[in-house]
Image (cartoon, rainbow, N blue to C red; front, side, top):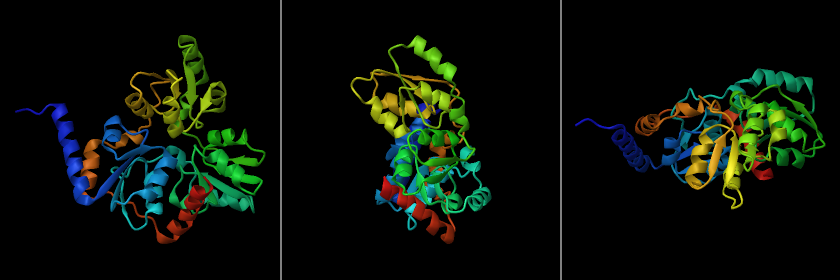
Length: 308
């Protein structure tokens, strides 16, 4: 008897449940993951939520469905646990825009500067960082610091957003998210005309002209909570398309309109149900970080959690 696609997906979900029990594993998934991956996760969230969740889980194995820097962060916070990423090629272009050698050179040019790194950075860069931040807490973190001169990396757009909400001097790194860069101000203007009752919600990784047009500028976790508000019925969503799966699932009676159908992160979509099965079955691919780098990088993450 020929299996249908529905049968195959159902079998994969059953195998995931079986191996999760055998491995004493928990699955964490970012809001941008494929819908079918979000649906098998024990917890779905944004970078800050997943960072916090990684410190609370009691499982022996963490399967991290996201990109590599996120899995590294989970490992930094859980050095004694096994952290698996189902596809080790799931990288982040923005992360790659701040190689550690370049960060060290820039620090040398700015003696005494305080380095604030977005979590979208490698463990090696976090080891060169005073404190990390996420899109949800970047403004809070920067304003909580006693220092007046901040080197903010790698996202210039998030840095611009922070700059608008602080009196500190923000020295921007010239990085960006290619996915959010595809969201254009003229697209939002057109959608506002088509949907005059809708609110426009965008991610702070969007360009400043897009941010200027938004009603709300929020992290993905903040967007999820905003969508639950009773007075909100129609939202124009300016972020990666994966988030809309969760928004619709939690709010089936509401309308969510993507700014663009091109806002898909190919790296986030590398992880599939099949790869989650293989990760659990074969215990692949474990995240490893050199001890000296891990110790220094962990401090920047722990300081972020303390300050937020």
